[in-house]
Amino acid sequence: MSDLPELIFCPGLLCDEALWRPQATALGGRLAMRVADTTKDDTIAGMAARLLADAPPRFALAGLSMGGYLALEVLRQAKERVTRVALLDTSARPDTEEQQERRRALMRMAQVGRFKGVTPRLLPLLIHPDRMEDAALVETIIGMAQRIGREGFLRQQNAILTRADSVPDLPGFTCPALVIVGRQDALTPPERAEEIAAGLPNAKLVILENCGHLASLEQPDIVADLFEDFFLTEAA
Image (cartoon, rainbow, N blue to C red; front, side, top):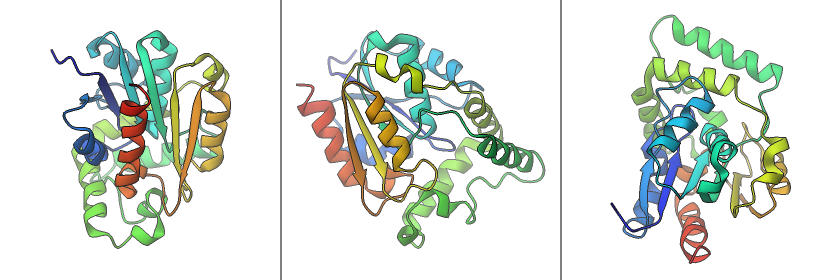
């Protein structure tokens, strides 16, 4: 067992370890790191219970989008075990009715015909317009979705649909928090991050310019530097 402090990465919808690879590479050798399995459970509470069952007694968390919902649920279930948390491009609120219906429509589409994962039509919701021609970034995003697959996607969407409202719980999560959001995030815009940072007692908010919903991949070096300061320097 490693004596290094542990950081658990929580991926977003249709994302896997590749979402965090730039940061894991930058922090390598200085933290013990693992990626939470978000493919087997159809509730956020179930994902959190699975994470906690495998985690050490004390650990740090980083979650993006759905991974942020998971991180907040881990705090709800066992906040005394979490040393610090980074929340990227996420929301403490449940879906609106409009968001729920859009999600259900995507689930219906996934259940008929071939599962297409992240299509070119969905990409503008995920990344900054200037990055649409970034072939390596687009390939990473599409590859993650294909690896998660249809059944994993449906379980994840159900988990997101049934997640708890975390806004009332934010004042009770007192560990140090780093809240990051892309200025041009179309899915969870900066006001959602501002709400989280305002509700948490010990939070720092960072808004990344020229960045959409997938900050860890769109601005990998900046996020890695923020993580280094937050998880290593400030924690020392």
